[in-house]
Image 1 (cartoon, one colour):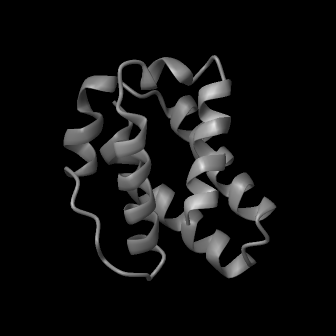
Image 2: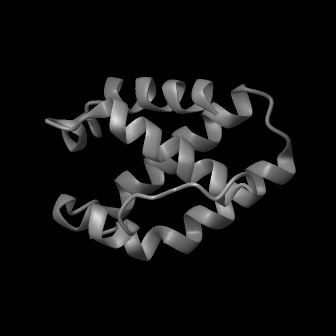
Image 3: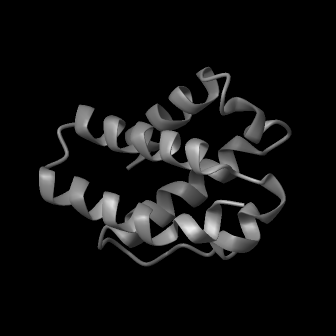
Length: 104
């Protein structure tokens, strides 16, 4: 999971449309949270202990376009790591399910 999270944040931080969301954020902590969250939603250990998604993203005013872009990066990173189509479909389903909690 670490390789996927690292690749995802490299992509997000290199995109000028998205990198402002991460200004002043402890990236190591965020990466740990993202790794735990991805593991949990993909059927791995349920060890995510961060804030609820709505609370964690409330102050960010994330647009639907930016949410969709992050989702596309995530799916692209996972596909690039040869994650199978069933897992990619599960990720897309989770993204669709959490959109309302993240988009401000």
